[in-house]
Image (cartoon, rainbow over all chains, first blue to last red; front, top):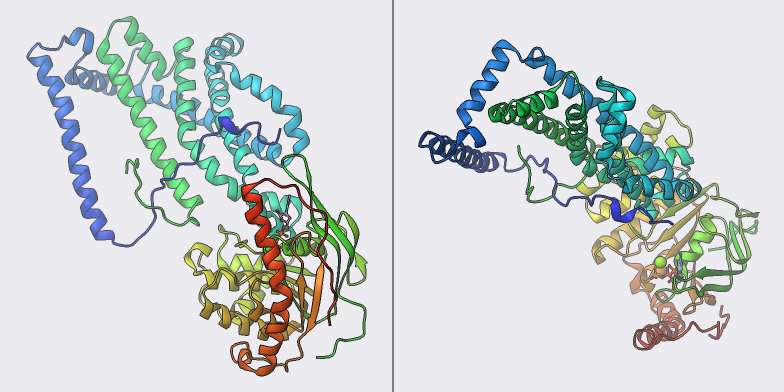
Length: 292
Length: 288
Ligand SMILES: Nc1ncnc2c1ncn2[C@@H]1O[C@H](COP(=O)(O)OP(=O)(O)OP(=O)(O)O)[C@@H](O)[C@H]1O
Ligand SMILES: [Mg+2]
């Protein structure tokens, strides 16, 4: 039963944005080139789409158009949406995702480390957690909507459930992977069990936990949006759903752009946090998938 | 060097340690091992790989319990982590997420000392091991030799009465190793703990120790004990060219060689045909 949760944990990615301060200017020159190439790619894709629409190769009724999405966004910003101001819609969704994320992460870390450190607890909970994990959790959304209503609570709970498992399995696995030498050393140096957990297990497991945080905010956002699609009176998910009901494809696109922006900002913040928390790690080469 | 007549700092009596192997069997790592180390004595332990040297240290430190026999430290049976014991591990065991200063201050902090006092003490020890100015670095920003110094300071700051060292310098290059040997001796003179120093390097063992214990190929037991009567303070780099040193070296090597050969033959045999573990059958000559 010792490694019963192993298969479900997200593996620790080998690539980490390096905090190295060496060869700064060369890096910035290279980065500048990359930014330019990325901007060009985006301009070509969006511009091509727009040109296709203008030339009537693409049917904008079904596929929408960049300028349609843009003007929808502008209308929302200037005149508000049918549900109230755009800012309040974003805030509601953000709030749901953020609460869900924070609560889910804290619960996941606490349970993961507690079960990882305690054989009895892990033996006791293992079957329950496995069963709970095997339920496709999205279906819980309907349940929560009925049980907790159309307000923010049902979305937060769905987001918590989605976030919890990923973080839990990684925290558990991270706890089990702690170098035995380091544990022995801490004991010899006089650390109590709590000191060992706090100063050896937690920092060591953080490599694993951080890996799960990147996908976890995505899950929290999914929880918030799906909750809103299933029944809500506020939020971006509702905005998208209403656009869909009005067959307003540009409204759906505009909503997607907003969601993507939120995800991108969150990812950047998490990467910053990671660099701060894991700054003791040796810098690694080639950060393949960094956005910024 | 005369051994003080007080009670031994470490006493292992007929210690046997068995491990459960992954395929359900039982492996005897140590068999009826007797070892005594006096307070302030520097004891080196040599033996072929896998003979139970590290296991011996874990029994003294209290990380593991003997299957049978008794382990006494300072006259008291080992139960739980032994107080007053320091351990420099075979593999790097400094905390990679703590700065050099926090690593060295860890022991006093764990033991309830205040941050300021612990840091002052840690700075002292860092100066002693020659790492002043590196307080804020993380371990990955140090060389292997510097990390070993951090590990040494981390152990010595607790002023252990018993210092266990498991091949502390084996990962270092030859030059660094002999420098570290000298540094270890001068640090040892500061607080004079009883030392058990495990090594593969016979020269290192003789240069450092008051006595060298040779273990048999696994299951480990004491094959022979040699007293090293070279004058102190020693210079580990120069002492190895004296006649006395050379004589001791060939004498101990004679005892060690057959064990190394046995261990080697066994590993090569095991990799071709999976033979079951033999019970203790090696001769147990008590020399010196
Ligand atoms: N936890 C364990 N479970 C099972 N077998 C073990 C365990 N620890 C050690 N052993 C076995 O006991 C024997 C002695 O191990 P030990 O680590 O003490 O050897 P050693 O003398 O330190 O070797 P080396 O010089 O290579 O470090 C080895 O054969 C090893 O496989
Ligand atoms: Mg060993």
